Amino acid sequence: MMKAMHWIKNHLPTRRRLIQVYAALLYNANLKGYISGEIYVGNTKAVCVPGLNCYSCPGAVGACPLGALQNALASSGNRAPYYMLGILLLFGLTLGRTICGFLCPLGLIQELFHKIPTPKLKKGRITRVLSYLKYVILAVFVVLIPLWYVSQRYPVPAFCKYICPAGTLEGAMGLLANPVNADKFSMLNILFTRKFVIMVLIFGACVFIYRAFCRFLCPLGALYGLFAKVNLVGVKVEPAKCTHCGLCVAHCKMDIRQVGDHECIHCAGCVDVCPTAAISFQAGRVTLRAHEKAEAPRKAKLARNRRIAWCAALAVLAGALVYFNLPARDAPEEAPPVSAGEPADPGEAAPPEEDAAPAPDEGFEVGNLGPDFSVPLYGGETFTLSECRGTVTVVNFWATWCTPCVAELPHFEELYRAYGDSIEVVAVHSDLVTDDVDAYLANYDYTIHFAQDDSGVIALYGGSTMLPQTVILDKDGVIVYNTVGSVTYELLESLIIPLLAEE
Image 1 (cartoon, rainbow, N blue to C red):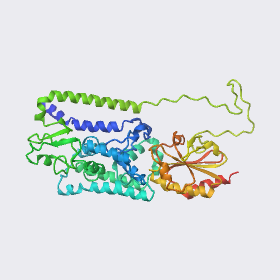
Image 2: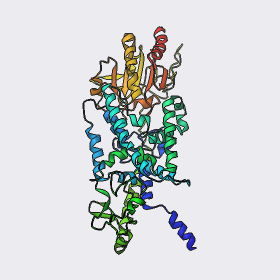
Image 3: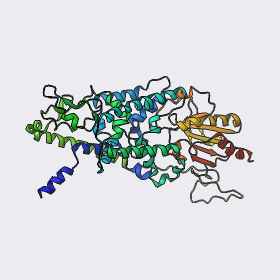
Image 4: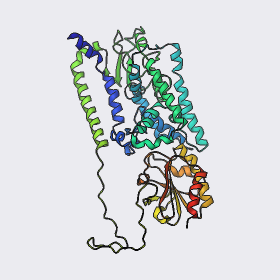
């Protein structure tokens, strides 16, 4: 019996592990996203969570600070991204790399992979040198490449695009795992293959090396590490008690030189190892955890405070799960408008129309009548689709932070310059992320219409968060092309020329 109790005690999750699981659930509280296969785009997506959690994850309810920083830099132009810099400064000064140890879902995933029984590679001089690689990645992939592409007027969030395993696992694979998105497999190319291989290598390394990504590659950890000497919450050493025995450094699996330095993730594993109880986990002057000997006199009070904290945290999580997963209230249905030839009295039969072809159904499928919409144009006025009847219309859904979107905009401009007397072209900017589109467009001499999707127009055409998307409607407003993915000028021209030739 005692043996069984000892085994259970050793295999129960620690408080830190419970906090890691809690943070992962809270970040991804939109559980219905995994069922619908869609990304949550509500108001909370404008707020960054502290840890590395992909914006495109179906369950994500907040933005990733690293992705948001790159997008801010990529679309900054001559403006400093003050909002993102302020958010990161706040996280760094308050929590620092405590976020890595407690509040990062990718850190939890790495530690779970490390639990697979295999021989483990211990830290040493080589791993300590490699730990500086993440600072190089921070400088090159998060800052320099996005800023360089700003000068080319071409947004590239380089780390997210070329390396980030969270984007591959949570975003791409999280969406593609849902049968609803089966048609998106055709969009995959060599870039996804490379990122998938990188992800497999990273998680494979984590089996043998404790937190391999966190230690060697994660630029967010590197950024938070810059606040090591000033962050408010984390492990602290009481110099008067410290004998410099080195047990804390030897016990730590990270590449630290001393407790609390830029490589420390503040997991508090060193607290009970210290023979003089010199180490404690603190939030300012408040001690959250001390050596078990130091905690003994106030054990009952600590236990009570922890229960209160856990109850409050669980209440927050329960509220988030309810808020993000309750079905949205359906808007009241409006009475259908009475059109010519339709009786106002439902009991009166409508006269038959002779030689009238049946009208196509309305919807986003090819062959259907395109749903009507009105959107505000940048610079004033309004674009209404139904006013374009009699003209071939091209609708492009795009965003300034979407690299393929920006790359193909010149194709639509060239098309409009060549066939502008016979076609209409409108580029509708996604409302997923607030951006200064006016400032962006000021750098170009585009003549096509640019509008803001302020009423969910993309949803009318079967789109959600996959960009770019192009829709082409003939002179009667019937959809002849509706596809997610990049287009070329040659493809656009080949699609509209037959439509222009129709009587």
